[in-house]
Amino acid sequence: MTVRAAVEAVRRSLEDDPARAVAHLRTEAQLVGVTQVTVRMGSHEVTVDEPKSVGGTGAGASPIQLALAALGSCQAITYRYWADILGLRLDGVIVRVEGDVDLRGFFGFDPNVRPGVSAVKCLITLEGPEDADRYQKLIIAVDAHCPVLDIFTRPVHVERHVKLTWGAA
Amino acid sequence: MTVRAAVEAVRRSLEDDPARAVAHLRTEAQLVGVTQVTVRMGSHEVTVDEPKSVGGTGAGASPIQLALAALGSCQAITYRYWADILGLRLDGVIVRVEGDVDLRGFFGFDPNVRPGVSAVKCLITLEGPEDADRYQKLIIAVDAHCPVLDIFTRPVHVERHVKLTWGAA
Image 1 (cartoon, each protein chain N blue to C red):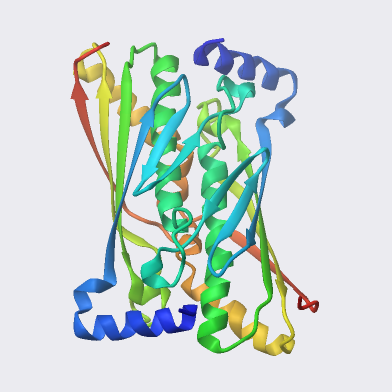
Image 2 (image 1 turned 180 degrees about the horizontal axis):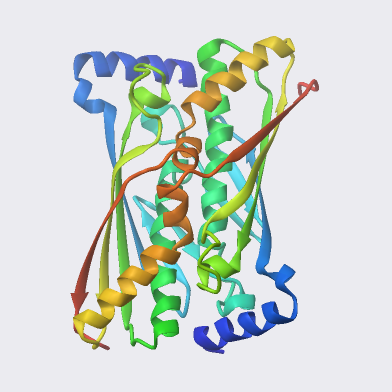
């Protein structure tokens, strides 16, 4: 099944039952070492850790690297879908995502420094035979529909609930 | 080296040379299948894909799942660091992150639906022997300093540059 056929199948499925449009995602992150975390996402798993320079063991990418990876992969996949939706040929996509993290924010050394990333850049290389103006339309469509770009650029409300348990090992 | 000792070492290092505070992160995402992406983050790598229900092969977690994994692991690690900074014992951390994605946003079926996530919840379980009010201080410190929570809840400016190449395989 092509991506475009999959999109059409989803459209027909939602016409029959609009409630199918919403996917409920669940992940679970467990601290398993000093700063090492195992995250389960359905049948997939990823190891996250801090580098040795800040006291971790470097067993995996850091959470911020993972957030940048989510952005880059989301851009690449959204280019794939929207090229097919718009009927454009696209032979290759590479997305480099760069960002700066100022440790003074995370460690609380300076309350004026944000703990997150700044100077975030996506450097996108598209390979294909179409005219440049057709790819311009694609770029506009991708920027309007990329889910993780939306998470980065527009505020997302995040509820937090904490449960305390007593049961030291 | 304990996490707290690492934080102190970073503090002293930054007193000597404040320019060391900023880490430049780089990731590269390459489309390698229909919707499958390989992301390199320094020496680490992750496979990202869409599920079969929308035309992918399910070879990895989706970009939005990865973004939620980044949030959950970042919360867990920030609890670790700030418990040590505040001198609290913390024996275990599990963070479940849930979120809803409405496919009508991503596929452009409804321009009023955001492509990203909504109803994001972090359900955090902390295990340890301290009094509840001490953990309340920890929760406040974590929410103020968690980098990926900052990315989700406050807008991040993302520059985008696209290069077109002609070179079909």
